[in-house]
Image (cartoon, rainbow, N blue to C red; front, side, top):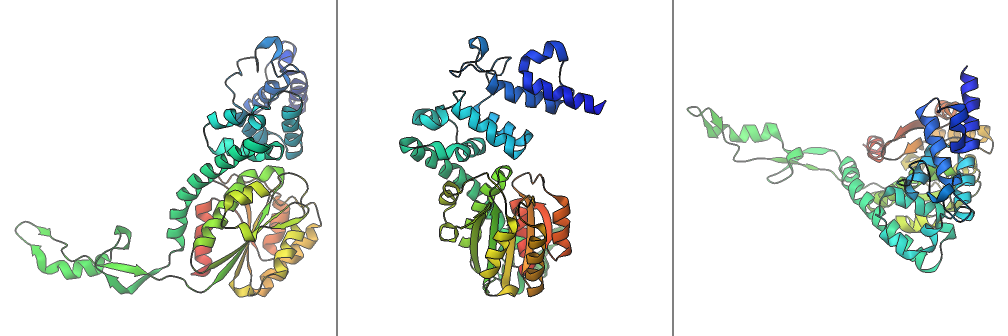
Length: 372
């Protein structure tokens, strides 16, 4: 029965809104959403108008381009996503995003628009490309500002109870020492103790250099992780005691270390989509490690390896044996929703890596534990 439902859902995707009379409604909310997304595109006429001049049809006129792109990326495999978004531009009139600077200026800069720009930036030219770059910078700056404080707190150092100060932040209050110094101000009649001489612990800065080598899978399903990786690399680079190497890869490796302090340049440089050769990227990073015991390799990937899985596992084993801390990140975004090859990830764990789906804040906490 489950197979019959799946077959019917496939026919609904092929036939669009015209299938509903004969086949009924989709069996699940997810199937209904897939059908709606495709109908929003393929229900359009050749000039970009919906059948009967109604735009998206069936009440879809409120679905914006960024919302549509996000839905397609969420619900369809990477290969299907690439085909459908290409059709959107080439055949069905959703060109205003990449051809009209005023349209792009009028849209609210947010994460959805950032993803849309990064998806279609290869087709942008002239003034539109400059406006797109400004959109990317605004959203990235907002994201960086939000994450930087949390990351800096996680990596600022452990408390040094030997060094105390009279001014500081509430989270650094040395309660025991403050209480001891304030006991003489106890008022027994009022039953009140005045903390007139508060003391705060200082924090030790970690000055010994660590190298963080971040390898980012740029296959089509990794867009959220690519964005957050670029921002996090810039944050780490700005902190004392860290050197950051940043590489993007699909079947080839692009070293973006020279641009690591400018996430916008990184994002406008990477090409999303294509195949994946994870082992090649790990081997590239391995050749450039100078101090294995002071190196963390952060591999941001879905572990769907287009090259040889055994080659990747062997590289992870060599790195771990040399003292490199290897972390495989199945997701790096605000929600950390993991979609990855569990079997290959488990083999990497057996070879000595840690594998997890983390938010940026959780990544910072992991790095903090490594260097503490």
